[in-house]
Amino acid sequence: MAEQSRSEHILELAKELLDDIELSRTSAESLVLKASRLARWVGSEEIRYWLKMEMGGYNGSNPISLKYMGITGRWIDGEKQTGYWGPLAQQAAAIDAEKAKLASLRTPDSSGEWASVAIANVTNAMTACANNISRLSGIRTKVLAQMHSFVTEIYYEKQFDSLSESIFERYKRDVDTLIGETCGDILEQIPSVMSRLAEGDQEAISHALTSCRRVIDSFADAIFPPQDGAIEIGGNQLSLTANKHQNRINAYIHQRVGSDSRKKRFRQNIANLYDRVSAGVHNDVTVEEARALFLNTYLVIGEILHLPEKIV
Image (cartoon, rainbow, N blue to C red; front, top):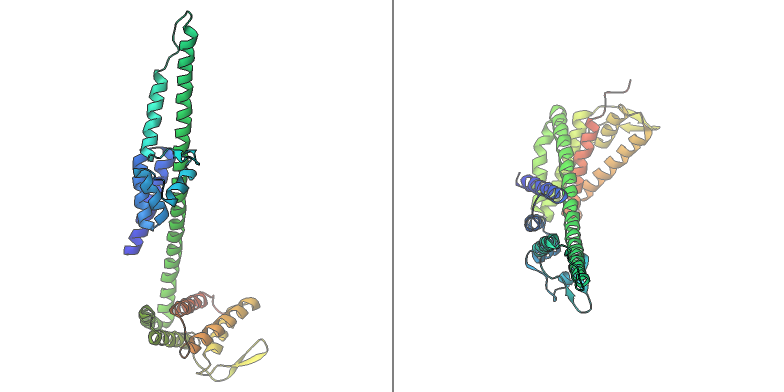
């Protein structure tokens, strides 16, 4: 629940920031503060340091500082290390000051020998203001573009995570219902597997894989109880006795799936899965592989339980 709330908070903050940037509805300083909070949440160290400089100013000794001086277009002369070292808020304030200065400049209404000089001075001052506004606006635009890129990446990543979690949670609830209706004792075994996998040591992993194998065996007994005789699948006679769990699962699938390629995929997946959870009891298996095997077991059971009624 806490992790879900964290993801939701990050997604909400990222969306709010994107709206702030795209709609120009807040100050530069506020944008940097919000982006810094987002960077802290997602643990992006380089971005955090860059945003810290956008709050307090750049310095000439740090490689990240020099990197983002270039990215944000702050250099006047890179070789001489001259540029706009101030934070974003300072650049924004300078833009406003230059705009106010430009608005106050007027071409003098004068005549005489000094008229041309006065007009030239005002014209030059207006040009200088316009150039400064252009350069400073370029810095601001590049900073916002960099920030927008960072926030967008986080937003869509979290949106995808949220969608994935939503899809999996819906599927899990559906599968749990089917398991409960068909073979409820399996649900009682799943918490034990998860608890063992959380421990992470080799003995716990071995116990977890043993439980996975028992889950598969219990599943086979529930959907296709043992019986005398055999079933013909693909020209082969498969025994359906108590110790032939894979055969009975494949018999259940055979009665419900018309596609030979899908039957083959099921058969191979079940065989590989059963072999691995059985071998893993005696051999070294990493906790990551054990978790993958458990998840695969759960997903295979879910897919089988979603198969239609018997083919007529």
